[in-house]
Length: 186
Length: 72
Image 1 (tube, rainbow over the protein chains, first blue to last red):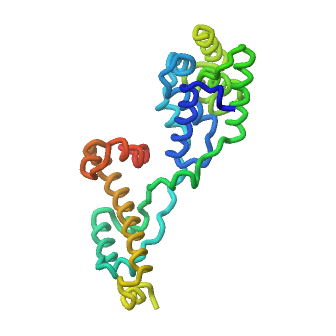
Image 2: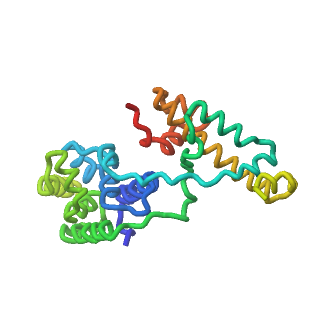
């Protein structure tokens, strides 16, 4: 399905996926895809979004971040066997950061790649279907980011709506801006 | 028998103890990193300053810890 995607539209998917991973999400949602569209420097999706004041950074701020998992258990016995006094470390840390700070401190290592590669949500999949349909209707064989953005706009997705609303824009206005960029690019 | 006693009797010659110590050290280092990075941010340090002290790239430290700290 993705062989018809141009480099910039593949980049949108890559950006969406990296943001999902960074935010600790197990899924790539419509919101992550919208971020990917806004992050691109290209003309068919990035420009119409920028023109109505929608920035990647503001979309990112609206996306939920997964709660941090409490870190695993440190084995104080094993540490003492190599000469490290865990109680001593904990006491020193608590002096600066307060009681219980070390036990509550998160471990922010990213889980090994592949182990938890995020998948598209059903809505994100649906937006890709709408993307392909939009390109077909326009008789445009190659999928560019503008088609991905059209797919998101046709989705009836609340997150997309709220971003548009915050920017005082609308599905109709942004769609027509994207369509004229697509016509200019074709 | 507590894990401390086991470690004391087995000593670090037991691979299992040594390996668990390595895993614990890594975890401990990660927890200390989170605490200190968040504190440095709250004290107004830039990502570059933090990255330089940690000996990693600015991008790496920002990607790992960015967006988590409220700097008000």
